[in-house]
Length: 593
Image 1 (tube, one colour):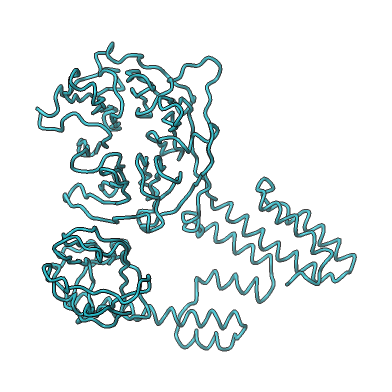
Image 2 (tube, one colour):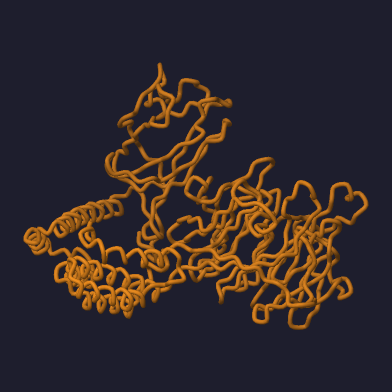
């Protein structure tokens, strides 16, 4: 069923299968035993005859199907044979399988059902019905055949079998690539016309053909510390606060109730109040959450942490507040959220506001782990929930909640196995819905990383990794405080936090950082492409010179002018690559090696 169709999706059904093949089995634990679920029968399982990660069992469906889930039954008692880690692959043949799942089973007696990858970017939803599956199968077979033909055409052209290339292209009526690429190949490889090649690159730039490459390029992180000018006021050391308004927090000795704002234009702090109680606002607190509603220009705050030793002598009612940034006025929405149908006093939760529906979504224990991250995508109207801590375990699971349909999808039980960040506590995240990306800065875990995830491609990419220690690296080593994100300038902000110094557990920081994730723009891609074209032209000039002093001088002048003007000399790697080209003036015999 195509996305956007008015027809309802077909209902999922249980699929019949046979055991096609297996790597090995031990004693009486044959793979065919898994076809029947008998939790009380200890022999109702498959067990391999070897102890390595090459063991497999292949299931063959009775007919092609789009498989959405897979369920593992278990013995009615905890058992040592429960899989700690496994992968599920799927495809139309054993020699062409794609990974659909990488996960593991809990060592308990409860059956587990896992969602499998079965669609790309929501293009298709379907199951076993022939009217859906047959078309998919035919399109897939046709796609594979066309790809094989294109690979043959590419091989013929690379080996200069142009007659075979042209004959195959004419017979199949397939284009190997975009006509502009074919024209570039002819200009650069066949004709050696470097000027024409650069003109084609300029055409590609004018047609915005570099946009996808730019979006897929890796980020380069750049941390910058923001320092105050002279005697300008700024917040004190703290952790457990919120930004970018900063309200409250813990300075290592006590909870705070000061309230600050940061102006990204002037890069200056403004103290709104040193004690919000004087503005008829909330009292001191830490480990709370605030969120900003751009529609009403209001800030909401909920929750606070109370030390267990102090709880008998402290009011444990959960209050809920709103701050109007236009009128600079606090309003108490609730004195006791539990009595008003909400949560009891909470901390280390997450909270976002949906401006379109004027709804606040808080997530809090015991429904989910603590220390998790939650983001809202206003374009798709989805909540992304991941990471955190349950009891003593750090988590790396990932769920999507569709707000309008009240539906939860499990994306991954362990995204660290899919090139995502390691499981951790206080993983702070921001989202850029316009780019289809969210960013995760890891806190309490073994490695300190900044990671991004491409939402449309379900792809994790590590952007930043730091194993250094010391005060100069505290921006990456601290127990990460909430990130602030400027969607216009594409800048992340980080203030203060807990450095986790074992010699001073009360130490908190007041350093202020911005993180810019840099990647090349289309103009930079064009410049680099021109550098490669002119580098090749220079090498051919050196080869053609063959010791002729006049030609050598012409090549040198070309290097000093035409090549140098398309080099970023501030880039150490690119500058070295440019300087190394000079050797070909004197070793022309090795130019094309």
